[in-house]
Length: 366
Image: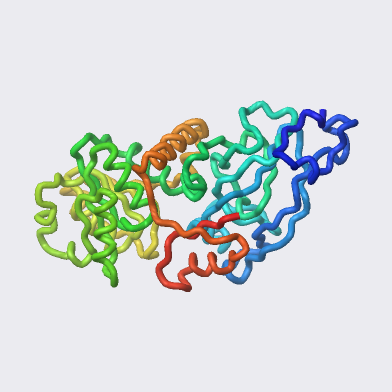
């Protein structure tokens, strides 16, 4: 019955429903009106995205209505809008955004999960349409998370930290004292790899681009726990492994750049090592010498988090998210972000597109 609905305080006055009729009757319960970032066609995000009013959505008996608290602008979000990402929401009127954290606003009467108004939840696995103020989706979409961490961490815990965790676990059996090497070390995934490896006693060799401020970037990564940080030009030497000093040759490498930055990882890997590619920021191909295969017996693999999450891993995913947020709460996992009010979405988008130079990850605050 409608009287069994669980609502945030003062919610009932804002929602339309009938207490005298079964929940399935017409006009039972609706979300508040919402604002959303929509697009009707693929193209440049700053041209096709628009902020629009969205009418109230009706709740089913097992639905949960949430109010978004924070949602990041990830590179994959941009790629979806551009139409170049393998999985995209249907058009027209697609709501952008893929991950985020919300507060439960209202719960349908037949919801059985331990979710109550006021709880923090995330879509897990992530779900299309997080760049809007209110969302109504079935209860099994939502995973309750702790609310004693900053909202921006709960909003971003899935795509980047979980990628780092899975890559450290899924390809090579690493033991304390072993080493890994990665390019793109200043990225969110790169920062997470450094810190998660440190928790496991694994050493990290990190490669960054040559650019102004590289010394400052090196220092920041070392404060996170990086063992060594090199610019690409520092590694363009003949006997590159002499730079490692007492560090062991890495058994595993992570590539998110491609081009020369990927070749440097291959040079540093030990005999029989594995390089995992999870991105291609330079848009340059991975080129592998014949000798890398014949004489070093290197393996090249790929990792796509969405494929992993779609392979009956929903419960595993939620357990790992809880683990990652516990590390955040303990101060063992952190990364740089910038919160921007949803009302200034255009500014956050421009920063994400690089129009304001190098900027921290943008997280929309609702």
